Image (cartoon, rainbow, N blue to C red; front, side, top):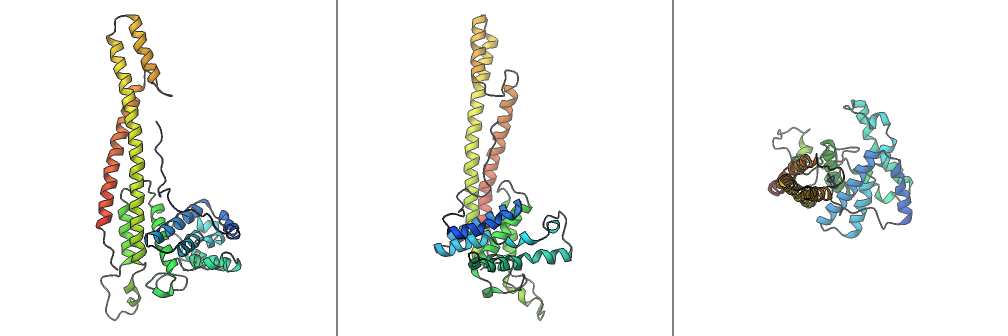
Length: 314
């Protein structure tokens, strides 16, 4: 059976291309990162640029976010592997070391004249609008808008990776969690100065709305991919139904020549790995797969409806 394949993110994503030769050479440092961080960095880069496009940002700013998003986790290259790749929860001490990837990435960029303009990606992407982020606990306008966009893309892809999504079914649950980070807490205690900084929420709702549009586009891409696979399954089922028809005629045939004729017809319709003994089982597998894919299409359309109903407060 042909495997169903598609990228979780739409293949229409922008890639690092047409950049200055010296800048591309400097970006080669990203090859020193571990595989998972490199994939995450690429996803965040593409998502950041797509968010910019849905926000109708100019091309120069979009390219800036593309590059700054790509190197946002550059500092993880300097984090000890036993901390970076730890399976369990980090200790308080390990977490403090992990947090230094922001300043380490910034310091590396400042030493490279080609990466220096994009140092906002590494340095600011964990800052929160409400002042609860790191490394400097900045708030609102003190955080570059590019970093506010990258923060949304970074948090989304981190949740997608953590939850091991292979389809956009139930992706609305991830978007609901992002909405929580965009909205202020509802029950602030009066005169509680420790909570005053929380009133703005953590992430900017405008890039989040743009991310929703990108996610819907990705869901539509997945639907298209599944529909293509459904067409393949239907063609295979139709072919094997023809084999079954030949078999029925063969079983009712009387003359050896007729039996050989229908048996030859069956054999010609079989593909690699299929035999006269197993084609019924394979046909049933195709039919079972077809039911599952059609249900996924319905679920994906339902997911779009859910996302469109989600509200993000400005």
